Image (cartoon, rainbow, N blue to C red; front, side):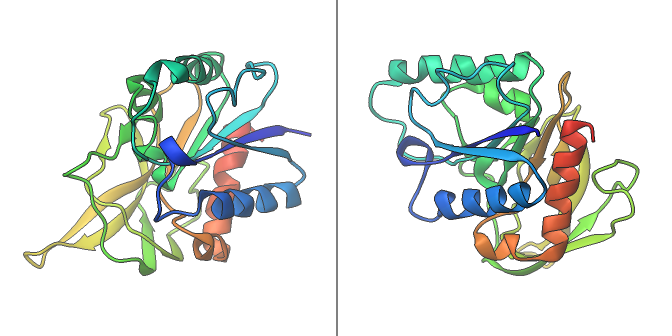
Length: 224
């Protein structure tokens, strides 16, 4: 049985607009139904104190950006341990706001292969959305053409040059043009890291095609 650890955003890595507890539970419910052993842990400074690369098979990050105030030094061990998991070869799945979390540690954006940039990245209002597969040559998206869900369509994320974009959101801009914005990509590595921008709230995880995308991502990350 594979061991999955889900980091759940709160306080420093949460916000009033995202129910990270509910969406993390939705992820856990789906993965447990597939036979995975899933542990949920909120983002406290000591959340990873007892976790090393030998203790977990997949790290899922479902947290966001809260006020980066207080004692930044108190979080140094948390970030070092998270980075050690990545460096130790533990596969990582970042969902939705994971592109806009851990902004006080630049190693995270590097590992994820991209990030949300305050003042530049944005999204249209939440609603019924279609996400388009642009690379069906990867196991995560092989045979897929679209994913539909009630969700946000992230736009103008900054994506690292070595990342492999699998899915885009077509977003209409103020000038009337439709622009394809990357929302699912594989990070450059060397380990297996996947970012999936879907998952604003539990309605996203109610979509069968969104569930399929998540399952495919997890299967690829675990090499199954």
